[in-house]
Image 1 (spheres, protein in one colour):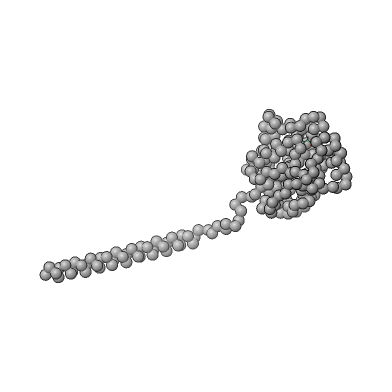
Image 2 (cartoon, protein in one colour):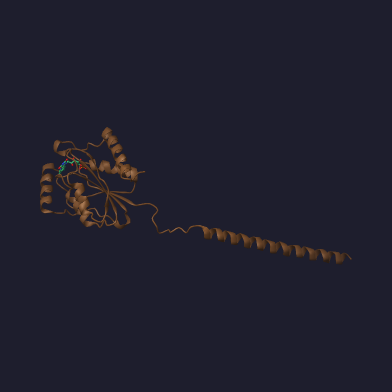
Length: 224
Ligand SMILES: Cc1cc2nc3c(=O)[nH]c(=O)nc-3n(C[C@H](O)[C@H](O)[C@H](O)COP(=O)(O)O)c2cc1C
């Protein structure tokens, strides 16, 4: 009798265990199925697409006014900041430099650049800064635009000058970037080396220039 009772209870225990195992398996399978379905409904992200545009800021600056504007732009939009250097620098003497630049413009000479941009193809937006020289685009910037293929990129020129404006520089940028989207340029007064005024964009003038840059960046849609 005792044995029969024990056997009966053992069978019941085994049946109960089997039931709970089967139940667990059913719950597990249902969870897997549901999570699989919800994963399938999530949009598949293409990891190869860039999430943000890559920006390069290249500038030419002799007395650091254009550099000051380049740094303001860099603070606002980020990206990679590069100063353009020449294989053979211009003379330190202002008048000799003017003479050389005038001659280079007349002959179409393109001075070789020491600065090399690695993997230009990775950049979507190029800010290009320069001073007005001889009321034109400086020869080193012409060299730069001849050297790199900027097809499909957005080019954003900016300029400082001695009080006579950008001259023909912005028009030349457009001409030398026929397959780029060239946005409206920024131009502001910098120094006047001729009159012994070197870095002018500093202190209160730098703060003022910073506001000018910011409203220009909003106007052209770079900043929201
Ligand atoms: C060779 C040379 C030519 C220049 N020609 C002009 C010019 O034609 N018109 C002008 O407004 N300023 C002219 N400038 C003054 C610069 O454009 C001005 O000082 C500018 O802010 C300098 O920028 P940077 O400090 O980045 O070199 C000339 C300066 C140099 C060195």
